Structure formats: C-alpha cells, structure tokens
Image (spheres, rainbow, N blue to C red):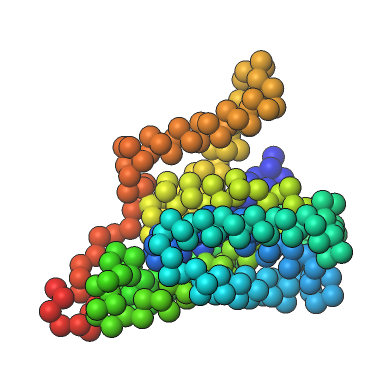
Length: 306
C-alpha cells in the first residue's frame, strides 16, 4: 500500500509540474502549446544521458536549461503566428521529437530506450525506504517550482503577461514588450517541463519513446481546465484530481469482471473526458479559478487605467 501511495504521489508531482508549466504558457500568457510531451521527453532523455557522467542534479539543471533554450528558439520562430497556427507548430515539434527519439538510436537507444538512470539521494536511505525518499523529493520539487512560479505571476512580469493575454493590442499601446514577454513565458514553461521530464526519468530509471505519447499533453490541459486557467493553486488541485481519478478507475476492473484491459483503458479516458465536458458546461472557469483583477493590478504605475 505504501509503495502504491508513493507511486501516486510521484505521478501527481510529475503531472503538477507539467500542468504548472502549461499554466504559465497558456493560462497566464495565452500561448497554446500542444507540444508539451516533446519538452517532457527532451527533459527525460537529457537527464538520462547526462546523469551517469555528471550526476543527477547537474543533469536535471541541464534538462531544464536545454528545454528553456529550445522553447526560446521555437517561440522566436513561431510566436508571431496566430493562436491556431502556433498550436499546429507545437504539435509538429512534439512529433519531430518523437521521431528523433525513435530513429537516433546511437544517442537515444531508439525503441529500446535508456536504462539504469541514476536517482537522487539513492545512497542516503536503505533501498526499501527509497520510494518514500523519492516521493518526498518530488513534493519538495513541486513546492519549489510552485513558489517560484507563483512569485513570478504575482510580480509586474506576471501582471504584464495577463495584460498581453487579455488584450495584446492594448498592452502594446501601453508600452509593454509583447513579443519579449511571450518568449519569456514560453521559455519559463519549457524549463519546468524539462524538470518534469527529469523527475519522470528518476522515477522509472528507464525511458523509451513509448512513454511519451500525446496523452501527457492531454492530461496537462485537463489539469489546467479542471483547476482553473491562470490559477496555480487551481492547477495543483486539478492535477491531483485528474491523476487520482485516473488511478481510482483502475479498480473498475475488480468491480466489473467483464471489462478487459483494453476496454478499461478506453473507459477510464472516456470517464475523464466526460467529467471535463461536464466541468466546462457547469463551471467553465474551473474549480479554483484565477481571481478577478482590476486594471490597477495590471498597470499600477500607469495613470488613468482605473
């Protein structure tokens, strides 16, 4: 039971990190990113490749830095596009990453993947207690990222991002560097997605391309929608709710013996999808929505905006 709970905690932590990253990009800055899984995969593979020679912490930092750098480049190339076209570009990015992971076997191991990924603090506790250590590490990592992002979105930078999201034309007229703000938001989200990929690699100690499917992107959007777009508190609640529901529905097979594994997988996603649709109809702002703000909250130093 303890092993199952620690597994659930780590899965919720990975989901929360990915959701927090998407919340910065889409929830706060209004930038749709359907290539979330590509950044998570890059973070995981960077960690897997660099952790053996450098150690787990430098590898995790490198994963975040690489994803931030690639996010910056992708943002500069595509950020001027309209929302629909930006979504298509990010879908293409995720697919390119998947193809590279499958075909560049000299680096990624191809379909076989990479095994024996070093874990953090593995020598500090006995092997039987390590799952608890990893769960604690995951919670601390989520707490650090949450505090950093919450500080960021409450700062003038975060207020400017919200202004750009709500009306980029007005924000530009008030002197806000719209393009630079969007690129910074995209890079910040990319760094957090790379960190989530590193935690994924630490947890499994083995990665291959089949682990990084578009369902990761779908879960991230589900978490943001369920929690409330733009709300980091809501995101944590949404990510936890989605993952607990997904895990709880595993036991449907015990209650209904006629359901096989394939039917159960489809049923679980169907139930989650139905829940999201009902939530969008009944509470479109999410369970813990972003607080309503006044004009002075966005531009406190600008006269005549109240």
